[in-house]
Length: 111
Length: 116
Image (cartoon, rainbow over all chains, first blue to last red; front, side, top):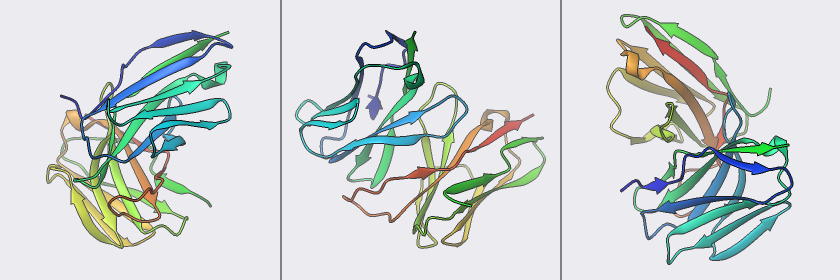
């Protein structure tokens, strides 16, 4: 089983719609979860982090966490072409004290 | 200069060459990281330095040799690499490295390495 698993995509969403990105993880003890955005040819940049079960909203972005299901997601409302990028889910694994990344989901917003 | 910088941005080397990648952070952070990013694969953590001491060596082959002379600089020395080592090498830094605490990692622009 992969430690952090994401659908690699590509995921295509029309402009203005909601983009939904999903991630599952294997370490049940993990407490910290992050979403990074990586534009083509660029380095990853942090856009959201979440520690508690439930939803966390920041502008057009909402992170959702369900520790019982070991599942974290990112919703992007009112999707814009500038949101087209690869989104990386990262989980801070407690025992190993390291940030483990998923392979990323490539998102394309179609005008 | 601000943030995390890396040089060179692109590097092409033969299998017998020796080269070094350089990373510098201007954020006053105490932890620095080397990651490898290959196509279609997750970011792979290679090394972690906290307060200039190596705290993580993630089963990386010895042909990769890190060096952290101070908290602002991190090097990755390369020798006798293989074509499968071709990848984007990313440096990152965070305020601290500690279990159970959130520390945002700031990434540099990366070095695109091609091994012929």
